[in-house]
Length: 199
Image (cartoon, rainbow, N blue to C red; front, side):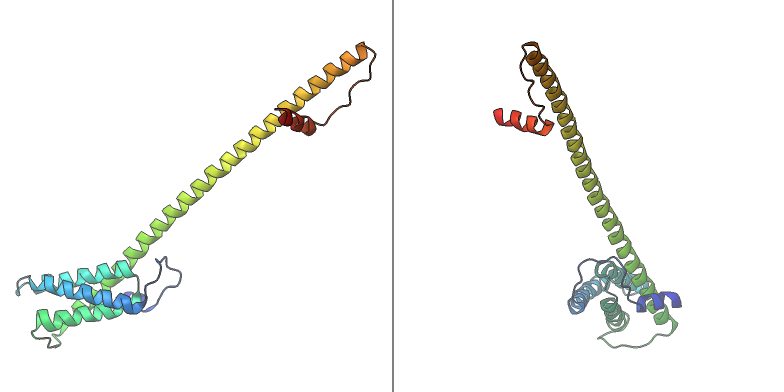
């Protein structure tokens, strides 16, 4: 259990996180969630104290998974325990310590908060992996298309070169037959540019 407490007290810098929300805003949103959780838990019969506390713990875990802000989570967890202790376990907001029962509830809150943080980071990590995979797949397809276009252009250039060679040989043979000067041999690129201009 001490390991979980230490893990919560260390703010990871290499964790996968969404765009950061100001801690004050996160605490405000968490306070609203705690109030909603308290209203829902108040609908549970008074005798079922464990179920009342379970509602509060679930909301703390949800807040941990959504926010991934450990500072705001610590404040919201303390607020959730105070609301449960003062309004659901006792009355009129009066806080009191109930021995080992409250100690176990605090430990449960710490465990739920740690599980919520882990679940939130795993979900965001998987989402980032999927996004990176889609990006790399799209890049690979683009590279394949470019490679195919380059091969097609090279094949077209080779065809132009063969056609130019055949034309030059034909013109040379015809010129020699009639005793004329053979035509100069043009580079393949010049012939290709000439054909494009004439088309």
